[in-house]
Structure formats: C-alpha cells, structure tokens
Amino acid sequence: MTSQKLENLLNLALNSAEDEREKSLNLNVGYDPLDREWDLIIKYSVNLDRVRKIASKVTELQNEYAVIRITESRIDILSEIPEVEYVEKPKRLFFQAAEGRRVSCINAVQDTRLSLYGQGILVAIIDSGIDYANIDFRNADGSTRIRYLWDQSLNPADGETAPVGYSIGVEYTKGQIDEALNAQTVSEQRRLVRSQDISGHGTAVAGVAAGNGSNSGGRYAGVAMQSELIVVKLGNPIQEGFPRTTELMMGIDYIIRKALELRMPVAVNISFGNTYGGHEPYN
Image (cartoon, rainbow, N blue to C red):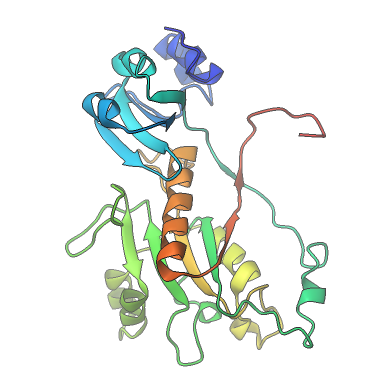
C-alpha cells in the first residue's frame, strides 16, 4: 500500500511488518495494536462526509484539518477519497528547554514606564498540566486566573465532560476551579478538580509565562503576570508515555476557539518538540 497522499513515514509504517514497527521508536506511534486502528491527521477540502463513513472517530479542526481514527485496512480507501488531500501519522512530542528572560527581551518590556504585564490577554499553556492551587496563578482575592483547564489524560467521571466538539479528556471552568480552591481539604479539592501536574514541567512553564510572583514576594514573576490562562494538559489515550501531534493539534484548536469565544488575544506556549524533518542549521 503506497499512496502519494500519505506522508513518507506513514507509507513506510504501512509497508513494514508489525513486528518490525514495534522495534522502531517512530513507526508505531499512532497505531493501536488491539483494535488495529490508526490515529491520523488529515488535510481535506469541502467536507468530511465520506471520511465519516469509514472512520470510527472524526474530530474536525479548523482550516480543514481533522484528527481521525481508522482501521489500517481502510487507509487505502481513505487515500482514494477526493476530498482528502493529505494524510500523516502522529509524531511523539518531547519537552524543550525554556529560554531566559533576558535573551527574550522581557526585562526591557517590563520597564515600569511601559506597564506591559499582560492585562486583558490570554496566555495558553500546552504542557503537562498545572498546579492550579499555586498562588502564582491566583488573584489577590484567592480566585483562579485560569479561565479553562482541559486535561486530555482524564476519563470523565460523574458530572464531568470533555469539551464540546472533542471526545477525550475533561474540561474544567474557572467556576469549577474556584469551587475546588474553596474546599476545606486537599482531598475534597482534588475530587472537585482532578487534574494534576505530575512532572511539574507545565507549572514551571506557566510560572515563567504568567506567574505573578506571589510565592516569592514578587521576586520571580513571569512575563505576563496580569494575564488570564487557558491550560491544556496533553494526554495520550493509550497511555504510552508521550503525547502526540494529534492531541497537540486538538489542543491548539481548542485554545483558538476559546479565545474567539472570549474575544481576547491569546499567546500560546508549546514546550514540546520532536526530531522529525530536516536537521540542517537553516531549517
């Protein structure tokens, strides 16, 4: 099975024996061996009507992109659909190191004469989650600065739902987070909002981008310390370790939709990367 609509890596994966794919760190990313299904990213035109007939799951994104789940045996049928322009498999994502404040020219921007501290904007963090109880992400009255928190790694419990238009994870609103912050015990707090940042990476990144410095008496404040936040904790439905480009695309789509809904400008931080593509110095 080889199609010009499929990216080279996907063609290679489909033309490799399953035991060979399992030995690779890359070829099996996006493949579920139990159901023999692939999570794929597609670029399409007009509509997804024909795709929906052969895919088990379709998540429609903006600008004619979609994330789909489809059995391996139907990928050749997918590639023959005229509306489908391009198909690629997910790629693993890895944490990237953050750049310093000085080399990012933040110190000059935060000159007191300019007073540019992020008022009226959204800072979106796509990462490992956030410690929503951290006082660096709370207002002076104790309420949260987080407008929305989407934890893609959770399965919805009673009373919880995924965001509208998406089929994975759990969405928490500012009101729900504030209710958790007002809980009398930590266990009650975690029952109300179950999302946790296990690695601490997302919390650290959010602190650099938007922490207000309350934990340090203002000494270690972030870049946009008066902004509000949208946080997406990337998750992998089959729990294989690192999230993939499919979850990342849905996270970006979710953030843009929320910013449009709130009519607020948004800056998105993605502290992930991968090793695909050219490695020349000019790439």
